[in-house]
Length: 446
Length: 102
Image (cartoon, rainbow over all chains, first blue to last red; front, side, top):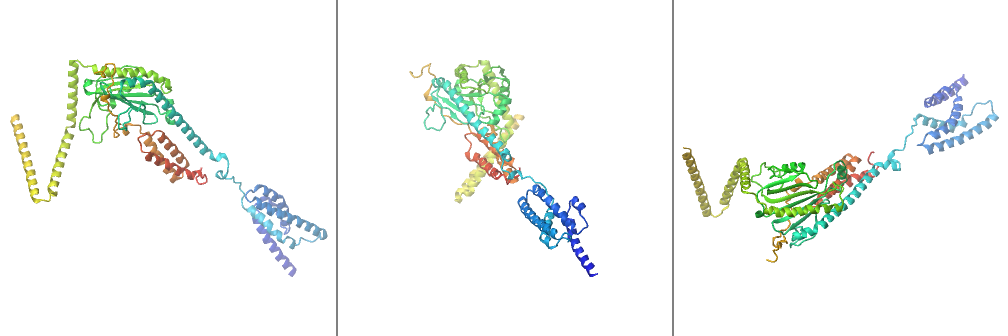
């Protein structure tokens, strides 16, 4: 009985151990092979651990080193145990396995089986931890784009500069023979010719010429394409545009008669009509590939200025002006030698300046022009009548307020009294005047 | 007068100095590209910094470059530099690629 009891206890102990192992083994094959034999588990475990552990070494990467060390240790131990077992078995074949032999060994299968419990997933090293070029493809792309942009900026800037210089070299003689002052940026104390273009931008160059009969001055603006901006270059591939030369001649008042005249491509004139305040007259449309538009006016005041208060209160100041806009041939693919083609156009400009001085409207034309102008002014005044009244009212109120303040601030009481009296008298006079006016209107109505 | 030849149209006594056109109307008429690009650059760099988006930072870089290329000479360099300074701030964290998700 006691022996049986002891045997049962031993069985229980081994059973609990084996059950634990049974739980650990999630692998079906192991569970299937698993025997009720108390000690068979060790055989299976040993064999399986031997066969599976090399595989485990191959599959797990994360704990690679750890597993190999442990398993190597295990292998050595196993081999050692085997040898011991073999020798022992050789000696005692019939005897069952000694518990003591496998004391240390029990833990290792446990650890290996516990490793089996964790599902082993193969995880790739995340991209941002890799040190390969592929992970930086966005940066490389962007930097390449930026370098391309910078290269284009330098090339475009240089080309524009060369074109401007070529234009100036071609036209320098003509300008210097016609104007005293060629090239002025307005910063020097004395009016001396700088003899070079004024660079406003990477694509806009100005030149101011002055000192001639008939005209006050001439401003030439070379408006090149934005070759320095890559976006613009790409946009121009869709829609070809030309470089432009804009010339604005400000005439003396006495040298130009009262007329407005415009010639140009239809598109240019439509746009001009919208933008310029003085283009109200009937214009001719005449195609010329180099001439974008020609616009002579005695009422030139610049483009329409958008004002916040609605209608401007008075007509803007006007100047007598001739405006020319020329397209540079080449429609974008311009070379410095193309600038020579513009020289005849500049001659035409000079010629028109002289001609404009001589051109006089005949009597009828003059009358018509004057009538038109008077009509325009009247219309304008009507439109702004209300606004002008309000403005006048507000000005009067301001004056009154200023006077009152002055009276209040006056420290001397005598002076204060006198000022007050003066103000009163002025108001009385005004009232009287108004009354007189009303009476007159009444009389007229009657 | 000997100087008043018919063939020579120049008149030294009638020289007028160059006056740059008034600046109130001009900025509105001029191309608004540099101003828009400046603004966009600042917005994108802020977005890139706050929301940690790498592409925003790169777009900001491009915007500030375009604004610089299109800028007028009369513009204040300070204004231009403001957008130029912001994009490195948003791009530098992304340069340490670990911080930004791809």
